[in-house]
Figure 1 (cartoon, rainbow, N blue to C red):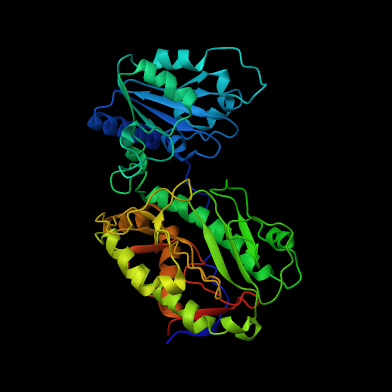
Figure 2 (figure 1 turned 90 degrees about the vertical axis):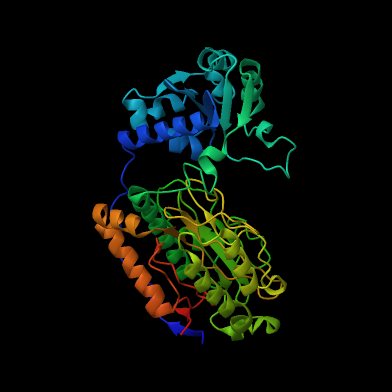
Length: 456
């Protein structure tokens, strides 16, 4: 039977700095992207990035545009980054650029308005680098389905100032973003041992920040005061940090709101490759809750944690995504829990890449998937609860690679698995690698966060 136990939240120690992208890794990524384009019959691919949509171009080149737009043009024999004034020197961060394996070209129109903008025009740069009459794929940040457009391939996720000249140059321009992001065949939809080590570092930073935030919650404090205690670290954000209490909408950031006992609260920290989120009540016990919500534990929080144990149990290679959807919706009935989004998705540099988990999906879970336990319930009386953290699905071969290359990472993961199984009572298969010390923790009454839910 679920119950409340009192524990200190676990701390399995800090990871070492994450491994940097190597030249060999970068070259392997470009080679894989070229092979995927060749299989698709594409003569070139144009990968777009900007401050918000960095994931695909960052994966392919190691460069993330900080202020401007950037464009990678990849053909069978050349790779060129089109960059603005401020990205041009920053691109040296990439081992591919530093080694001369990706060329750079200043295209001033990619710079911010009113900066010096004399030089090669965008259309001329594209005409020089994209073969005339070619079949060209593009990748921005999303692809579309036949229920959205009559010709989904023609729906480009690019600014018009790139799409129009490309359509004048090429025989056909089509959306090829799925080459990078699709849950089954996307090049970014699997990670290796080095990727797991990078993800663990990001998840550790996010989880420690959320832990500090949770233990700083105080009645009468402002959300700014509490958020300052998170000390979120220096990694780039994958989405805005949020903090919402009372009637503030859950996607909001701190506003100066005073924290009041007996109100719902939610908060998250999301770094590249990680998003740690918690939701519950500003309360020390159910006696602090509004009268209609005082059965919150039995009706809402306990069933949620049981469902998340079931979610963990299904995270094995080969499980159809549609089965996860069906069993989650049965465990969390819509009339009480109101889950509307996919119960779990892939995470990368962006917070949400794509998901094999959808109604009717026959896409199987696979080894190497970086999976976010992102199951978001909501109810007008009970508010919400959350156990949102990052995991990787790993078969025996990937686990062996991780143990050989990063034994400390593998050791911390094993201790997190043991905590979730032995202390919380969750069903955690060997194939599910928890990346954060918060994995398994649900503290329903966040003015007393050492009270957490255990399943036995």
